[in-house]
Image (cartoon, rainbow, N blue to C red; front, side, top):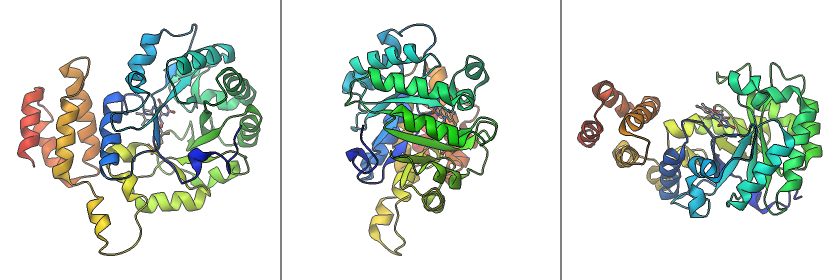
Length: 333
Ligand SMILES: Cc1cc2nc3c(=O)[nH]c(=O)nc-3n(C[C@H](O)[C@H](O)[C@H](O)COP(=O)(O)O)c2cc1C
């Protein structure tokens, strides 16, 4: 097992695109990782939406559905690696699925201990396991021992289920499990997705001998800087902020120098973002209704990042026809 000083993946501060079920699906990953690469700061990796493990070793087509990148060396077209996230509570079954995911080409396995969904939690999966650190330990260590030693195994957690009282036990479980790194969404399950995020609580995990990645409520450069300062780690995972401002990844490392030209070129203008929105609408989806719905979800989020998105939103919010939306986008250049 590598420690935080020797893991070459963390020799520089990492910037990761968060797993978000129904949001950073393969199409959105494709677009966002392309934008980051075009701007000169590719994501170091992204993590798939969670794949739920319940009773069996899932068939290959399930893994390919969630992670079509497996057909291409587990990388997006712009070359960003995609790690596979599993969610479940049966250690042995999780291990068997992880082994199979590796056989299909997963470059790393991440284990979800953060999902707040009722259906998932009622089956003892996701964030509810934060109240059972010994089960977390069993799952991570079983997966760690089962998959090839050169494949990293990581965990993604929140600060706790209803409160932060089990943080020491959770840290102990992670420490003993052999996990290669830890990502922390700095809120409890009860705190949901509402601001603030409690970045300073992440410090409690920095005594671990593995890299720690901070996540939650990073929407701009100032918040990124504050998160790094308060959490004590320089590794960041970007979630909704990266969908709202697809250039956030380059903005977070902006240096405070006025009139620096690199800052201007590293900003994604609305006119350039239009091309990516059209690409999104031309992407693969079950059908056009799904695609248009997904696009509207994105445009709704873009209204928080781009003033221009609001008038487009007003114009197309009732539009169901994909071609008409593409025409409106072209006109809004
Ligand atoms: C719609 C949505 C779906 C999510 N799905 C997942 C998931 O599948 N796996 C996971 O580990 N976290 C998931 N998350 C949590 C995010 O990865 C991230 O931890 C959280 O959004 C906090 O980061 P943010 O405040 O920057 O968005 C999801 C979050 C959202 C908003």
